[in-house]
Length: 80
Image (cartoon, rainbow, N blue to C red; front, top):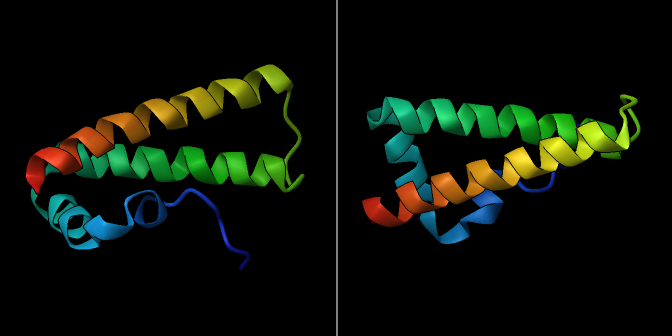
């Protein structure tokens, strides 16, 4: 399997333990992290030209990923 950029562990490299703990203890964080993972993988498949997609849809997915990353980052910072 190829490397998928923008995984949560890459976005927050110093917070691996916090991310793991939140996934286990916080259902909302866990759901949002899963949504982030799904959106990120969809973007990766589009950028790798595995799946075709319109530019508008790709841009919408990137905005969604950024919003999820911001939300998750705030939750991670609060949990430190």
